[in-house]
Length: 157
Image: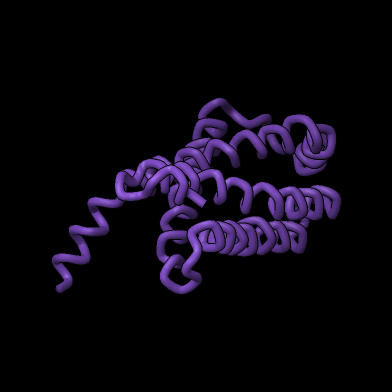
């Protein structure tokens, strides 16, 4: 019984990873737009206030890899939620909202309390993420289902 479950989960990792890559790329693009354009001056002032050095290229690569991994985790969570919600897009949306709550909202709240971010950075990031994460999860879920051979193109949503 347990061996069969492990094999089935292993056979389905490619769609989860491809969907996760797509979701992660959406998040990377969204975060780059938010932090390098929308909040750039706010982040620069905050880094000066906290006497932080400029991020290194190594730190940027780590951030991208972390967001790509988060995309895969989101898709895995969506697959786990599917039996409970029955509709694939609803499972993806639920996974995106859970990741938003536990990673974006919860962490920003803690960083705001600790004084590491300003209220503007925290609220803008949380609001941005409320759109970004569900959208990324829906895009990733679409790719995930597209890569599963037993799903017809008309059944992607």
